[in-house]
Image 1 (cartoon, rainbow over the protein chains, first blue to last red):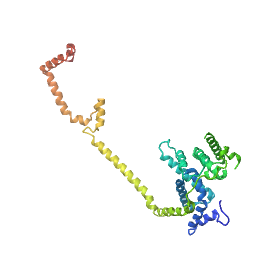
Image 2: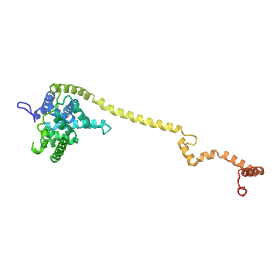
Image 3: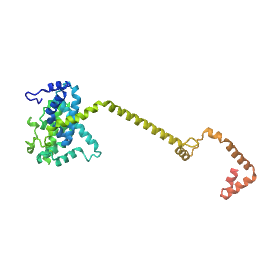
Image 4: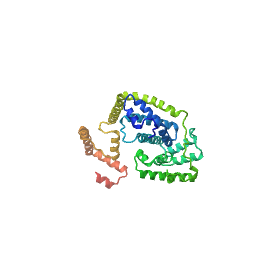
Length: 186
Length: 152
């Protein structure tokens, strides 16, 4: 999907991975090809760099364990995104379970992280936009990030999230309206 | 992206650039750090037999411990039972309800004592001095004469 001229295709890398003497090399190339895209996908959901780093590593460990059974029913890119999304969402859910009192919600904690994060370089408007996105329900937040920032096609999103294009369009529309309302009220 | 997909608030236009940062050299070093983590992960797969066995051992020990606790609990409860075969709490309930549901074996064992008491009472009843004593007692207690005559 993000193959450059002279580079191996995803299918070739998967084939190499199945050859024991080449599997480490092939896996390393897959990591290098997708690490940044997956990192930013996770980071937009988790906000914090350290949390994102942990989840990205867990994602690639799952990829390493699952790649031997990967039969290319979906593209490698879609499959990786799906694993990264599931890992990020389950990380958020685990975090939510740790808080017994609903007053201390995870989204509020992420908002606070945004304020004091040394790795956030955005201006006031970007900070406001991020806060508006954090006010969305989990699923809408995910869809909004994938569509608005990554400009991902609905078909690809549908394949990754295993939901219909129609429901994704509706989710994105609702998310946009909520973000606009939030920004206008600020 | 179609226009309808864009936010209509004008101050967010051109704000799609990434506002987040990563530490210097993060992506350059990520692969090496991941390899380290994977190498930690791999030996654990080789001894996966032990690891898989452990949960079963732990759950078996837990079940055994619970079973032992239940046994100990019932033993302690049994120690609270007296000669009647009832626990202290059961006796309290019986006394409170004023119900004496005595076991047959208990009645048979104590029949001799019962007979002696009955005989003593009847022998006293036959004695006119005993009757006078009762009459005197009832008069002292301000019981009406008519009631005393009816009772005797």
